Amino acid sequence: MSHINRHVLVIAVLATVGACLAGCVSTQTSPTITAAVAPQPSPDGQVEQAVPAGAIADQGGDYYGQLKDAGFIVPAVKPGQVDSAFHRKSVAYSTKEAPGTIVVDPAKHYLYYVEAGGRATRYGIGVGREGFAWTGEATIKSKQEWPDWYPPKEMIERRPDLKKQLVELQSGLGMHGGPGNPLGARAMYLWQGDKDTLFRIHGTNEPWTIGKSQSSGCIRMVNQDAMDLYQKAAIGARVVVLPANVARR
Image (cartoon, rainbow, N blue to C red; front, side, top):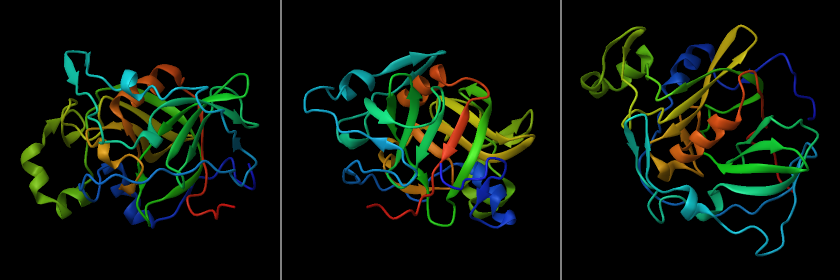
């Protein structure tokens, strides 16, 4: 990667705003579909290689059916909710990053789980809106299935309607994990050293936000994809987030 400090996470917001990022909710709920983004070379030398037509079939229909997990039902992703350009796919991916690394490309709304043999699993993601974007490196400090959600005080003050959905939990006012929880079926917590970045990779109950930039900063995935990545990604896995505003050639 070019000039990314491996020890400093660059957050493009004021520190007072940073606490709000843990809310991980969208800023709008209009279920419009974002147009497909054509794969292009990334500026750091990571290149998603073209795959011959028909070599890898779009398996979104297989991946996104209804699931039962830990007593909860994960609804199927309905046709048209997520543009097929953002469906999970195995792709050829040339990178210097080691297998097991997660590379996030906010500009193209893709997350790559790097695998051996020059390949990766590519997932569509939703990312933070302008002013909530971040770039840098972190590690997965912990992972949780059906995590509880603790909206920050600032968010509750902005959204007093949230209070009626919250209860007193072990760590404060929040929402029990479940299908209606904004963190979805899985969450992976990103730290840098002994500091919580307040960013998470997590599932979402708003699949129409995949391929868009409208969250409060976290990296969101369709629940089925978050569950798949959760199985693959190890505690301590390196996460590399590319700049969101790099001009594409």
